[in-house]
Every structure is written in structure tokens, then in C-alpha cells.
Image (cartoon, rainbow, N blue to C red; front, side, top):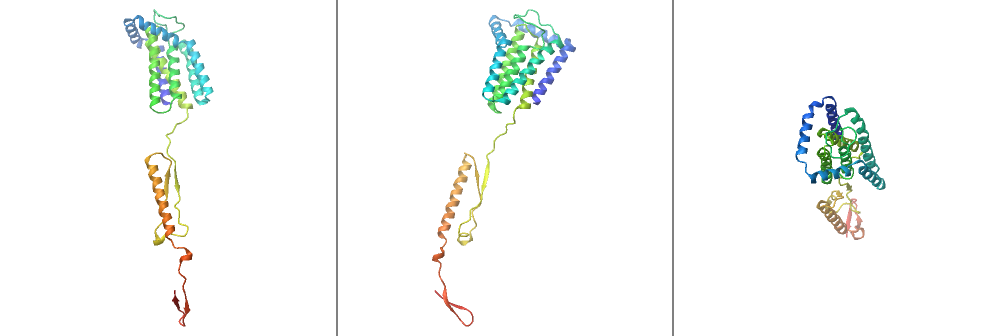
Amino acid sequence: MLVGLACLALAIALIAVVALTPSWVRPADHQWLRWMLDVRVPPVVFTAKVLNVVAGGTVMWVVRAAIAAALAIWRRWRALAVFALAELCAELCIGPVKALVDRPRPAGSLVAVTGQSMPSGHALIAAVTAVALALILTRPSRSRRLAIAAAVAWSILVALSRTYLSAHWLTDVLASLLLGTGWAALWFGVLAPTQRTPYPRTTVSPAREPRYGRPPGGQPSPPAIIKTRSSGGRGAALRRRERRCRARLGHAKLAAPAASERPILTGTVSSHGRMARTP
């Protein structure tokens, strides 16, 4: 959640700078646009136009609807809530930010564009969708790190394609990436369950006393055996120790003399009150 708040705060700060003091970012935006024009080649232009369609409104609406339907079928209600709220917030902030900043687009766009320049709807939707999916479909492990890296790479690729086609300024797509990532991380931090690392459960079995008292010689009972639910070598060693203790208890029971085998003392009582023992 802190990552989401930090991304949203950076996005708001960048939007405020562009809206209030555009001269601060204008040199960087124009320099980046010149670099994009210098490296423009037909194969890369074709790829950028394909991304313009794939990451566009119609295709992304179909993709997001399919994702929401799949989460509902799998009954992943919490994940569905994270995904839906992140997408809704991202969509709702596009129009107000465009109207607030009222920034013109770069000249010479290679694709059809409508509305103002900031933020980039393509970059914003690509970021929020990819990051939300990476968070809700993985667990805290190496797979989540790889998924987040792939989501970031996809978002940056879409953002660069928008500047390559002269459809947006550099600061437009930067603010859009921050907004999309911020909304996804924020709602995931608020609604996602806390995932804890499982620990093995331990149960203590009481020490067993022999049925006919303590073993001969006054030996103490064996210590309590700790049973650990684990498939590792420690669990097997504890089980072997318990079997040895039970075996020793069994031998002690067999070694104890039975009541029928004990000697019977007989004799007569003397005048001094003592018994003369005779076997």
C-alpha cells in the first residue's frame, strides 16, 4: 500500500508541475521527441502502431471484461474487487486530469488521437491492468517478482510507443505509468489478504509411565517426545527416537516380576514378637 501511495503522490506532483509551470519540463519533452524522430524506422513504426491497437480502448475493454469474468468463475472475489477498483479509479481519473492540465499534443502524430495530451490513456490502462494481474495472480515469491518485472516491461513498452508515434510527450506517459501502478498497488494493499509464511505445527505427547509402576532400578520415565509435522530429516529422527523409547518401555515391562511369581513368606511368631521366616 505504501508503494501505491508513493506512486500516486509522485504522479500528482508531476501533473501539478506540468499544469502550473510547464516551462520546467518543456525542454526535456522536446529533447525526447527529437530523439524519437531521429531513430524512427518503418519496422519500429509498424510495431508501435500494432501496440496502439492492442493497448487501445476497444481491445483493452474486451481483455478486462474477460479477466473479470475469469476471476468471478474462479470465485476469487477479493482479487476481483482489487482488479475492478483499480481499473475503475484509473478510468475515472483520465478525463478530469485531461481537463485540468489542458495540454496540447505534439505535432505530427502518426495515429489518430482525440482529446488532450496528459495523461496517456494507453499507458495508464496498460500499467494498471498489468500490475494488478501480477499482484493478484501470484504469491510472494520469485514468481511474483518475475510477474511484476514483466508487467513493468509491458507498461514501459506501451508508453515508449506513444512517444515514438508522437502521440504524447514524455512527461505524459511518466505520469500515466505512476498513476496506473499506484492505483493497482494501493487497492492490492488495502484489500489483499496478508499472506504469512507457514510454520510446522508442534504437539507434545505426554511421557508414558509403565503400567506396573516405574521400571526396576528406579529408572526415570523417558522424556516427552516432540512430534513435528515435517517431512524433513528432523521429523524422521524424532520418530525413530520415539520408537526406541517405546521399545525400552516394553522390555522394562517384561522384566518386572509378576505378582504370582513373588515369594510367599511363612513362619511363626516368637515370644519377642518377631517372625521366624521360613521360605
